[in-house]
Length: 315
Image (cartoon, rainbow, N blue to C red; front, side, top):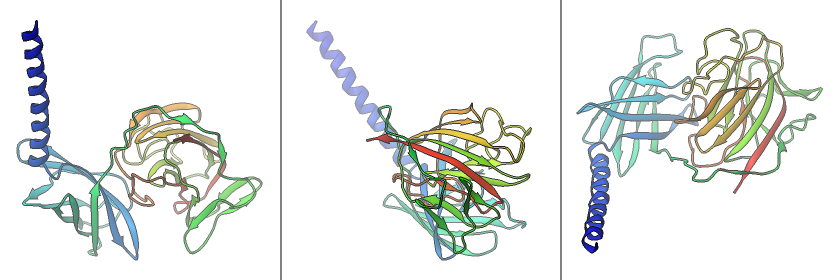
């Protein structure tokens, strides 16, 4: 009996050691692999960017990249040798045949380097590993908070030199393209209810923690995609496109816990506890481990919001 227990203990110890060695070897063999939160010195401001690298086959790497705007883009080949990482990808929304060129150095667990945009301009960046944001316990919810009082912009900050946001009849309006707007308060995990209305062919978005955009766009009837209404822009497709006709009030009910997001669009669940890999284009910053605000996009066309209610998790 004692011998059986002894052999079981030995087997357990060997399993733990083997698992640890595999993890160590994986880290040593693929040091660039993983997700990276990047900060770019971009046009007199600090812009958020993101990179994911995975090994493919014996010596190959592939990835995904988010620039300061636009959606996540696939990277078919990431070169990595002796601490140097590089890749190039086609232009996305820019009308050019030029490619974006990424050159970085991995040193002491940090990334740094330059990104040459499709316009030929070079920008310096730094990067660090993105946090897991895993929650071991389900959250306990606090009391709902009205983020918008229906009267004025108290509790909100406009992110631009010119403010086009106004409050009329209990509605927060951006009558034309201009600045984005964010809540002054910041949050970690929360449930959010928000209602919105847009005119025909308009476009906006709601940024969770100021980093993860739920797309708002006039695209009723189109096949569901991450870049259409209800999607986490560039990352997560909604199951259904629940967009209504333009000029109708619509709603989102969202739960964000760590990276796990659930989205109801107009009362129908379209995303159920899916992981958001990283920041989306246009994010306020790439500091994923910190609390962040609710931010609404005002630079893509007219948009209206009302009944903005957030229920934060209790620590």
